[in-house]
Image (cartoon, rainbow, N blue to C red):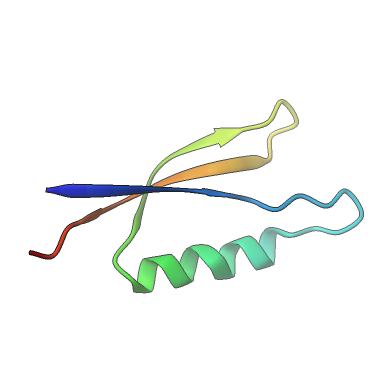
Length: 57
């Protein structure tokens, strides 16, 4: 069985937050989460990421 999580990239027009978002994604990966899909803005920035992992029973 799978479980899902949706995370949102924090946006700040004055600062590039890609490095912080990458750290957050890597943290979730260490917990067993994999990126399933992304939602992009019209300017090409990832706003939301859908994560998936197996439920440990």
